[in-house]
Length: 365
Ligand code: SF4
Image (cartoon, rainbow, N blue to C red; front, top):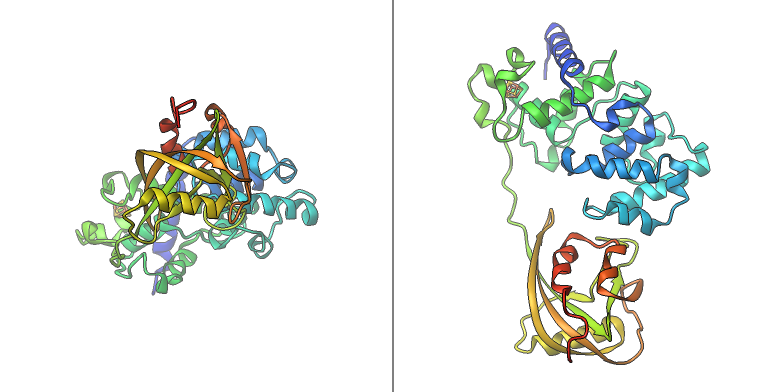
Protein backbone atom coordinates (compact mmCIF):
# COMPACT_ATOMS: atom_id res chain seq x y z
CA UNK A 1 0.00 0.00 0.00
CA UNK A 2 1.17 3.50 -0.80
CA UNK A 3 0.98 6.31 1.72
CA UNK A 4 1.97 9.85 0.89
CA UNK A 5 4.62 11.19 3.25
CA UNK A 6 2.78 14.45 3.70
CA UNK A 7 -0.44 12.66 4.68
CA UNK A 8 1.42 10.42 7.12
CA UNK A 9 3.00 13.42 8.82
CA UNK A 10 -0.35 15.18 9.18
CA UNK A 11 -1.98 12.11 10.70
CA UNK A 12 0.95 11.72 13.11
CA UNK A 13 0.80 15.36 14.19
CA UNK A 14 -2.98 15.43 14.63
CA UNK A 15 -3.03 12.22 16.58
CA UNK A 16 -0.08 12.96 18.87
CA UNK A 17 -1.33 16.46 19.61
CA UNK A 18 -4.81 15.13 20.42
CA UNK A 19 -3.29 12.51 22.74
CA UNK A 20 -1.08 15.01 24.54
CA UNK A 21 -4.09 17.26 25.21
CA UNK A 22 -6.82 14.69 25.80
CA UNK A 23 -5.33 11.44 27.05
CA UNK A 24 -6.99 9.79 30.03
CA UNK A 25 -5.38 10.23 33.42
CA UNK A 26 -4.53 6.57 34.09
CA UNK A 27 -2.26 5.31 36.91
CA UNK A 28 0.24 3.65 34.53
CA UNK A 29 0.57 6.85 32.49
CA UNK A 30 2.26 8.69 35.36
CA UNK A 31 5.57 6.95 34.64
CA UNK A 32 7.54 5.32 31.85
CA UNK A 33 9.00 2.74 34.27
CA UNK A 34 9.16 -0.40 32.09
CA UNK A 35 7.98 -2.66 34.94
CA UNK A 36 4.80 -0.58 35.38
CA UNK A 37 4.22 -0.36 31.62
CA UNK A 38 4.63 -4.15 31.41
CA UNK A 39 2.16 -4.88 34.22
CA UNK A 40 -0.42 -2.49 32.79
CA UNK A 41 -0.14 -3.84 29.24
CA UNK A 42 -0.43 -7.45 30.40
CA UNK A 43 -3.51 -6.62 32.47
CA UNK A 44 -5.07 -4.62 29.64
CA UNK A 45 -4.96 -7.53 27.22
CA UNK A 46 -8.58 -8.64 26.64
CA UNK A 47 -9.67 -6.52 29.62
CA UNK A 48 -11.38 -3.14 29.92
CA UNK A 49 -9.50 -0.13 31.34
CA UNK A 50 -12.03 0.46 34.16
CA UNK A 51 -11.68 -3.16 35.26
CA UNK A 52 -7.89 -3.01 35.22
CA UNK A 53 -7.39 0.18 37.30
CA UNK A 54 -8.13 -1.29 40.79
CA UNK A 55 -6.23 -4.50 39.96
CA UNK A 56 -3.24 -2.50 38.78
CA UNK A 57 -3.23 -0.29 41.89
CA UNK A 58 -3.44 -3.28 44.25
CA UNK A 59 -0.73 -5.12 42.29
CA UNK A 60 1.63 -2.16 42.54
CA UNK A 61 1.18 -1.90 46.29
CA UNK A 62 1.96 -5.59 46.76
CA UNK A 63 4.54 -6.04 43.98
CA UNK A 64 6.09 -2.61 43.27
CA UNK A 65 8.99 -4.05 41.29
CA UNK A 66 10.16 -7.20 39.52
CA UNK A 67 12.14 -8.31 42.59
CA UNK A 68 9.06 -8.33 44.83
CA UNK A 69 7.06 -10.17 42.19
CA UNK A 70 9.80 -12.74 41.60
CA UNK A 71 10.14 -13.44 45.34
CA UNK A 72 6.41 -13.95 45.93
CA UNK A 73 4.41 -17.16 46.04
CA UNK A 74 2.47 -17.77 42.80
CA UNK A 75 -0.68 -18.33 44.88
CA UNK A 76 -0.42 -14.73 46.17
CA UNK A 77 -0.12 -13.49 42.60
CA UNK A 78 -3.11 -15.55 41.44
CA UNK A 79 -5.16 -14.30 44.39
CA UNK A 80 -4.51 -10.69 43.36
CA UNK A 81 -5.31 -11.61 39.75
CA UNK A 82 -8.55 -13.38 40.71
CA UNK A 83 -11.42 -12.19 38.50
CA UNK A 84 -9.21 -10.70 35.76
CA UNK A 85 -9.22 -14.04 33.89
CA UNK A 86 -6.62 -15.47 31.50
CA UNK A 87 -4.55 -16.65 34.45
CA UNK A 88 -1.65 -17.76 32.26
CA UNK A 89 -0.85 -14.03 32.10
CA UNK A 90 -0.16 -13.95 35.85
CA UNK A 91 1.84 -17.19 35.81
CA UNK A 92 3.95 -15.95 32.89
CA UNK A 93 4.60 -12.62 34.61
CA UNK A 94 5.77 -14.43 37.72
CA UNK A 95 8.16 -16.60 35.68
CA UNK A 96 9.37 -13.62 33.65
CA UNK A 97 10.05 -11.61 36.83
CA UNK A 98 12.29 -14.41 38.07
CA UNK A 99 14.25 -14.39 34.78
CA UNK A 100 14.49 -10.57 34.94
CA UNK A 101 16.03 -10.86 38.41
CA UNK A 102 18.40 -13.69 37.47
CA UNK A 103 19.61 -12.29 34.13
CA UNK A 104 18.96 -8.53 34.17
CA UNK A 105 19.50 -7.45 37.80
CA UNK A 106 15.78 -6.84 38.30
CA UNK A 107 15.40 -4.35 35.39
CA UNK A 108 13.46 -5.19 32.25
CA UNK A 109 15.80 -5.52 29.25
CA UNK A 110 15.81 -2.54 26.88
CA UNK A 111 15.67 -4.29 23.52
CA UNK A 112 12.61 -5.74 21.83
CA UNK A 113 14.41 -9.01 21.09
CA UNK A 114 15.30 -9.63 24.74
CA UNK A 115 11.83 -8.57 25.89
CA UNK A 116 10.23 -11.06 23.48
CA UNK A 117 12.24 -13.91 24.98
CA UNK A 118 10.49 -13.45 28.33
CA UNK A 119 7.44 -15.65 29.05
CA UNK A 120 4.17 -14.01 28.02
CA UNK A 121 5.77 -11.10 26.16
CA UNK A 122 4.92 -11.19 22.46
CA UNK A 123 4.97 -8.70 19.63
CA UNK A 124 2.36 -6.35 21.07
CA UNK A 125 3.65 -6.05 24.64
CA UNK A 126 7.29 -5.86 23.58
CA UNK A 127 6.41 -3.01 21.18
CA UNK A 128 4.47 -1.20 23.92
CA UNK A 129 7.30 -1.44 26.48
CA UNK A 130 10.01 -0.65 23.91
CA UNK A 131 8.23 2.43 22.56
CA UNK A 132 6.82 3.85 25.82
CA UNK A 133 9.77 3.16 28.15
CA UNK A 134 12.78 3.08 25.83
CA UNK A 135 11.51 5.31 22.96
CA UNK A 136 12.29 2.60 20.39
CA UNK A 137 10.23 3.00 17.17
CA UNK A 138 8.16 -0.20 17.41
CA UNK A 139 4.52 -0.15 16.28
CA UNK A 140 1.82 -1.74 18.45
CA UNK A 141 -1.00 -3.59 16.73
CA UNK A 142 -3.97 -4.89 18.69
CA UNK A 143 -7.67 -5.18 17.87
CA UNK A 144 -8.29 -1.48 18.51
CA UNK A 145 -5.41 -0.38 16.31
CA UNK A 146 -6.45 -2.72 13.48
CA UNK A 147 -9.96 -1.30 13.53
CA UNK A 148 -8.66 2.28 13.31
CA UNK A 149 -6.31 1.38 10.46
CA UNK A 150 -8.99 -0.51 8.51
CA UNK A 151 -11.23 2.57 8.69
CA UNK A 152 -8.53 5.18 8.17
CA UNK A 153 -7.34 3.46 4.97
CA UNK A 154 -10.67 1.86 3.98
CA UNK A 155 -9.09 -1.58 3.88
CA UNK A 156 -11.52 -4.49 3.56
CA UNK A 157 -9.08 -7.14 4.81
CA UNK A 158 -10.89 -8.88 7.69
CA UNK A 159 -9.33 -7.71 10.95
CA UNK A 160 -9.98 -11.06 12.67
CA UNK A 161 -8.48 -13.20 9.90
CA UNK A 162 -5.48 -14.89 11.49
CA UNK A 163 -4.05 -15.62 8.03
CA UNK A 164 -3.67 -11.84 7.56
CA UNK A 165 -1.85 -11.26 10.84
CA UNK A 166 0.86 -9.01 9.43
CA UNK A 167 -1.34 -7.09 7.03
CA UNK A 168 -2.25 -4.25 9.40
CA UNK A 169 1.20 -4.24 10.95
CA UNK A 170 2.51 -2.94 7.63
CA UNK A 171 0.21 0.10 7.91
CA UNK A 172 1.11 0.61 11.56
CA UNK A 173 4.85 0.52 10.86
CA UNK A 174 4.52 3.07 8.04
CA UNK A 175 2.34 5.35 10.12
CA UNK A 176 4.42 5.24 13.31
CA UNK A 177 5.89 8.53 14.51
CA UNK A 178 9.58 7.75 15.03
CA UNK A 179 10.14 10.92 17.04
CA UNK A 180 7.50 10.08 19.65
CA UNK A 181 6.75 6.36 19.24
CA UNK A 182 5.39 5.89 22.77
CA UNK A 183 2.89 8.75 22.58
CA UNK A 184 1.90 7.82 19.04
CA UNK A 185 1.22 4.18 19.96
CA UNK A 186 -0.79 5.17 23.00
CA UNK A 187 -2.70 7.69 20.88
CA UNK A 188 -3.66 4.96 18.39
CA UNK A 189 -4.78 2.65 21.19
CA UNK A 190 -6.76 5.37 22.95
CA UNK A 191 -8.36 6.55 19.71
CA UNK A 192 -9.61 2.99 19.17
CA UNK A 193 -10.85 2.67 22.76
CA UNK A 194 -12.59 6.03 23.12
CA UNK A 195 -13.40 7.47 19.70
CA UNK A 196 -13.13 4.94 16.88
CA UNK A 197 -15.15 2.39 18.85
CA UNK A 198 -16.37 -0.87 17.32
CA UNK A 199 -20.12 -0.17 17.04
CA UNK A 200 -20.56 3.59 17.08
CA UNK A 201 -17.44 5.60 16.33
CA UNK A 202 -17.62 9.23 17.48
CA UNK A 203 -16.34 10.67 14.22
CA UNK A 204 -17.34 14.21 15.24
CA UNK A 205 -14.64 14.13 17.97
CA UNK A 206 -12.01 12.35 15.89
CA UNK A 207 -8.67 14.13 15.43
CA UNK A 208 -8.00 12.35 12.12
CA UNK A 209 -11.45 12.69 10.61
CA UNK A 210 -10.24 14.73 7.63
CA UNK A 211 -7.78 11.94 6.68
CA UNK A 212 -10.18 9.05 7.27
CA UNK A 213 -11.12 7.38 3.99
CA UNK A 214 -14.26 5.62 5.25
CA UNK A 215 -15.54 8.87 6.76
CA UNK A 216 -14.90 10.78 3.55
CA UNK A 217 -16.63 8.03 1.53
CA UNK A 218 -19.55 7.80 4.00
CA UNK A 219 -18.72 4.13 4.58
CA UNK A 220 -18.06 4.14 8.33
CA UNK A 221 -20.75 1.54 9.06
CA UNK A 222 -19.19 -0.97 6.64
CA UNK A 223 -15.70 -1.05 8.19
CA UNK A 224 -13.88 -2.91 9.57
CA UNK A 225 -14.71 -6.16 7.81
CA UNK A 226 -14.71 -9.37 9.86
CA UNK A 227 -14.88 -13.04 8.92
CA UNK A 228 -17.72 -14.93 10.56
CA UNK A 229 -16.51 -17.00 13.47
CA UNK A 230 -18.06 -20.38 14.13
CA UNK A 231 -20.38 -20.40 17.11
CA UNK A 232 -18.51 -21.18 20.32
CA UNK A 233 -18.89 -24.69 21.73
CA UNK A 234 -20.84 -25.28 24.93
CA UNK A 235 -19.31 -27.45 27.67
CA UNK A 236 -21.30 -29.03 30.43
CA UNK A 237 -19.60 -29.31 33.82
CA UNK A 238 -20.75 -31.04 36.98
CA UNK A 239 -19.36 -29.86 40.32
CA UNK A 240 -19.61 -31.54 43.72
CA UNK A 241 -19.55 -29.51 46.92
CA UNK A 242 -18.38 -32.33 49.18
CA UNK A 243 -18.81 -31.78 52.92
CA UNK A 244 -16.89 -33.67 55.58
CA UNK A 245 -18.31 -32.32 58.83
CA UNK A 246 -18.21 -28.53 58.59
CA UNK A 247 -15.58 -28.46 55.89
CA UNK A 248 -15.82 -28.81 52.14
CA UNK A 249 -13.29 -30.03 49.63
CA UNK A 250 -11.36 -27.65 47.38
CA UNK A 251 -8.85 -28.71 44.69
CA UNK A 252 -6.06 -26.80 42.99
CA UNK A 253 -5.67 -27.24 39.24
CA UNK A 254 -2.22 -28.16 37.88
CA UNK A 255 0.08 -25.15 37.42
CA UNK A 256 0.03 -25.29 33.62
CA UNK A 257 -2.90 -25.25 31.22
CA UNK A 258 -6.33 -23.62 31.29
CA UNK A 259 -6.97 -21.80 34.61
CA UNK A 260 -3.70 -23.30 35.87
CA UNK A 261 -3.09 -22.98 39.62
CA UNK A 262 -6.65 -21.83 40.39
CA UNK A 263 -8.81 -23.51 43.03
CA UNK A 264 -12.21 -25.08 42.40
CA UNK A 265 -14.69 -27.62 43.70
CA UNK A 266 -14.20 -31.18 42.48
CA UNK A 267 -15.81 -31.46 39.08
CA UNK A 268 -15.55 -32.83 35.58
CA UNK A 269 -16.77 -32.14 32.06
CA UNK A 270 -19.72 -34.31 31.14
CA UNK A 271 -18.88 -35.96 27.84
CA UNK A 272 -21.91 -38.23 27.56
CA UNK A 273 -25.52 -38.15 28.62
CA UNK A 274 -26.54 -40.35 31.51
CA UNK A 275 -29.79 -41.39 33.14
CA UNK A 276 -27.94 -41.61 36.48
CA UNK A 277 -26.13 -38.28 36.91
CA UNK A 278 -25.61 -38.84 40.67
CA UNK A 279 -23.86 -42.17 40.10
CA UNK A 280 -21.72 -40.70 37.31
CA UNK A 281 -20.75 -37.80 39.60
CA UNK A 282 -19.82 -40.11 42.49
CA UNK A 283 -17.76 -42.32 40.15
CA UNK A 284 -15.93 -39.35 38.64
CA UNK A 285 -15.18 -37.74 42.01
CA UNK A 286 -13.78 -41.05 43.22
CA UNK A 287 -11.59 -41.24 40.11
CA UNK A 288 -10.32 -37.66 40.60
CA UNK A 289 -9.92 -37.62 44.39
CA UNK A 290 -9.85 -41.25 45.57
CA UNK A 291 -12.73 -40.74 48.05
CA UNK A 292 -16.25 -42.14 48.06
CA UNK A 293 -19.09 -39.65 48.34
CA UNK A 294 -22.86 -39.70 48.54
CA UNK A 295 -24.74 -37.26 46.34
CA UNK A 296 -27.62 -35.66 48.21
CA UNK A 297 -29.18 -33.27 45.72
CA UNK A 298 -28.73 -30.77 42.91
CA UNK A 299 -28.47 -27.30 44.46
CA UNK A 300 -28.11 -25.03 41.46
CA UNK A 301 -26.63 -24.17 38.09
CA UNK A 302 -24.17 -21.51 36.96
CA UNK A 303 -22.81 -20.42 33.61
CA UNK A 304 -19.84 -18.52 32.27
CA UNK A 305 -18.63 -17.50 28.81
CA UNK A 306 -14.91 -17.82 28.08
CA UNK A 307 -13.40 -16.56 24.83
CA UNK A 308 -13.54 -19.84 22.94
CA UNK A 309 -16.32 -21.73 24.72
CA UNK A 310 -19.20 -21.40 27.13
CA UNK A 311 -19.77 -23.47 30.22
CA UNK A 312 -22.91 -24.43 32.07
CA UNK A 313 -22.32 -26.06 35.42
CA UNK A 314 -24.65 -28.16 37.54
CA UNK A 315 -23.77 -28.15 41.22
CA UNK A 316 -24.55 -30.95 43.66
CA UNK A 317 -24.44 -31.10 47.45
CA UNK A 318 -22.46 -34.19 48.44
CA UNK A 319 -21.06 -35.82 51.59
CA UNK A 320 -17.81 -37.64 52.24
CA UNK A 321 -18.33 -41.34 52.88
CA UNK A 322 -14.92 -43.03 53.06
CA UNK A 323 -11.40 -43.29 51.69
CA UNK A 324 -8.17 -41.29 51.66
CA UNK A 325 -7.54 -38.41 49.27
CA UNK A 326 -5.43 -39.66 46.35
CA UNK A 327 -5.42 -37.05 43.59
CA UNK A 328 -5.56 -37.95 39.93
CA UNK A 329 -5.27 -34.68 37.98
CA UNK A 330 -5.49 -31.87 40.56
CA UNK A 331 -2.24 -30.67 42.15
CA UNK A 332 -3.41 -30.16 45.74
CA UNK A 333 -6.44 -30.40 48.01
CA UNK A 334 -7.71 -28.59 51.12
CA UNK A 335 -10.69 -29.18 53.38
CA UNK A 336 -11.91 -25.68 54.15
CA UNK A 337 -14.72 -23.95 56.02
CA UNK A 338 -17.10 -22.29 53.51
CA UNK A 339 -16.15 -18.82 54.79
CA UNK A 340 -12.46 -19.54 54.07
CA UNK A 341 -13.06 -19.85 50.34
CA UNK A 342 -12.25 -16.16 49.84
CA UNK A 343 -8.60 -16.88 50.79
CA UNK A 344 -8.14 -19.03 47.69
CA UNK A 345 -7.75 -17.81 44.09
CA UNK A 346 -10.75 -19.22 42.21
CA UNK A 347 -11.89 -18.69 38.62
CA UNK A 348 -15.10 -16.84 37.74
CA UNK A 349 -17.36 -19.84 37.35
CA UNK A 350 -16.48 -20.96 40.89
CA UNK A 351 -17.23 -17.44 42.17
CA UNK A 352 -20.71 -17.83 40.71
CA UNK A 353 -21.10 -21.02 42.75
CA UNK A 354 -19.96 -19.38 46.04
CA UNK A 355 -23.45 -18.08 47.00
CA UNK A 356 -24.75 -21.67 46.92
CA UNK A 357 -22.48 -22.48 49.88
CA UNK A 358 -24.57 -20.43 52.31
CA UNK A 359 -26.22 -22.60 54.90
CA UNK A 360 -24.95 -25.87 53.46
CA UNK A 361 -22.56 -26.82 56.29
CA UNK A 362 -24.07 -29.00 59.02
CA UNK A 363 -26.84 -30.25 56.76
CA UNK A 364 -27.94 -33.79 57.40
CA UNK A 365 -26.64 -36.36 55.01
S1 SF4 B 1 -13.38 9.49 11.40
FE1 SF4 B 1 -14.62 8.02 12.46
S2 SF4 B 1 -14.23 6.06 11.45
FE2 SF4 B 1 -12.61 7.48 10.84
S3 SF4 B 1 -10.93 7.07 12.27
FE3 SF4 B 1 -12.13 8.76 13.11
S4 SF4 B 1 -13.65 7.79 14.47
FE4 SF4 B 1 -12.77 6.20 13.16
